[in-house]
Structure formats: structure tokens, C-alpha cells
Image 1 (cartoon, rainbow, N blue to C red):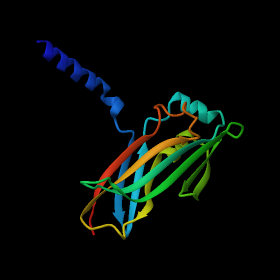
Image 2 (image 1 turned 90 degrees about the vertical axis):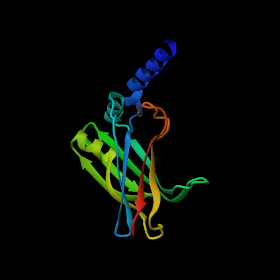
Image 3 (image 1 turned 135 degrees about the vertical axis):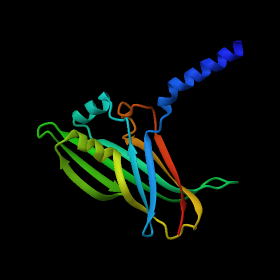
Image 4 (image 1 turned 60 degrees about the vertical axis):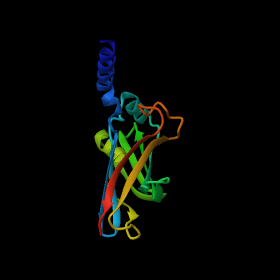
Amino acid sequence: MRPFRAVLALLILLALAAPAFAQRLHVTPLTRDGRVLVSFRLTDVFTDEVQAAVHSGLTITFVYDVELRRSATLWIDRTIESSRVVATVKYDPVARKYLVTRRADGRMERAETIDQEETAREWLTEFEKLPLFSSRDLEANAEYYVRIRAHTSPRNAAFVWPWGGDIAGLAKFTFLK
């Protein structure tokens, strides 16, 4: 009877902890017109601490390291290409506006001034169909995946993340020509 109780207790513990293991970085790759388009969304990051940091006027930077990789059965997975996407927000408490920017591989993609906090949140955490990689050199009918690691910059802004360290997400796809 004791092993049964131990197994039951373990199952209950895992069921209660399951939300903590839920993926917070959702990744969706799509191949179109010779490009690998990457969409991703970071969820559950705007805690009261993050909101307070933004409203303090501190520049908050979200860094996303994106890798296009190919699985290898007998060796280490191979990185085909990599890219860095950076989104920042700085709140102006006098004007009550958010200055938001997006960069891809060091190039400024967009900068805007936004009135609404929800729009600024989306600007930092939701990305749609970014043309980050070429599909020209990908092998037809081969398995690939896109892996993204997210963190804040500067790294000493640990209070910003509701978890410690980086967070990662990935999605696999088969390249069809």
C-alpha cells in the first residue's frame, strides 16, 4: 500500500506543478517565398514588478536570440542561421507615453510612441512573421526547428523576469519545396 501512496503523491505533485512548466514562449515557423518566417509570443511576463519597472522610466529591453537548427541523430544539432531581435520600451511619466523600438540583427526596424500600456506590452512580446532566415539552402523534406531564448538586458535587472535566467521555446517543422 505504501508504494501506491508514494506514486499517488508524486502524481498529485506533478499535476499541481504542471502550470509552472507551461511553455511561456510560443514559436511558429512558416516557410514562404524563399524565407523562413518566424512568429513568437512571450506570455505571463508582465507581473506587478515588471509594470513598476516600466513605469519608473527605466528602459526595459527584451532580447530574443533566434536560431534555425537542424536535428542530428548521432551528433550535436547544427545551427543553420541565427538572428537577434531586440525590443525596448521606455515610459515617459510626464507625457504618459511609451517609446518603443524594435531591432533585428542591429538594424532599427521600427520606433514608435504609444499611448496605451497594452499596446506597449504587445510590442515587446508579440512578433508576427518576421523574415529572419532564407530557406534557399534548406534540404527538401528535412526536419528543422526554430529555437528562441529570451532574456532581459541588462542582465542585472533580475527583478524584471518572473523567473530566473533565460526562457526558451522551440517549434519543429519539415521543409517542403
